[in-house]
Length: 223
Image (cartoon, rainbow, N blue to C red; front, side, top):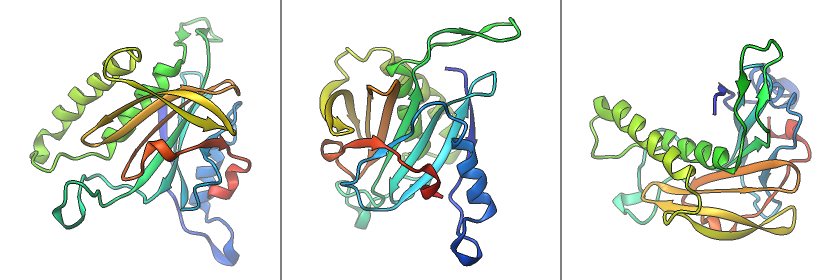
């Protein structure tokens, strides 16, 4: 899936409670999307924050991520040294436009189709981006990340394989089937909505079994 991601880190509000310029730029990256954005439903009452959008070769928005809970950093730390309780508790929802194979307007090539496997791969890579095996030397991280990214793609390309199970979660209040897998670093899931988009999600410290998804009514409120 050939896309370009634009990081859109959360920024503080400016004077008078208005979004600061960086926050406004972040929101602006989401606005051109011709599809609805998804996040956790109203049952989740914690912090929500924008992350990044991805664009295709022709510049159109193809996917984007919205975070919930603690903003994760590039580490895999645990409270009081306990391997059973991760320090950061978060869930990230990835919305992916459901697009068929398309030819570029200038006739120089074509854009790949996006499928539920695309959502699964983006979610898997997203989880990796906030994972750091504590026993690994920093100099080896790039090699480890390349290897794990390839593994994430292989897994995403085989959603009916033994590494995935099926999980039913509500999407806009209606039960929907998701592909789900767990690992020592967190969980990943992926499915398709009736709104013409695929959903991926990943997280750590928050159980995937209790989540629900819904269309974001006002993306500017996340700034």
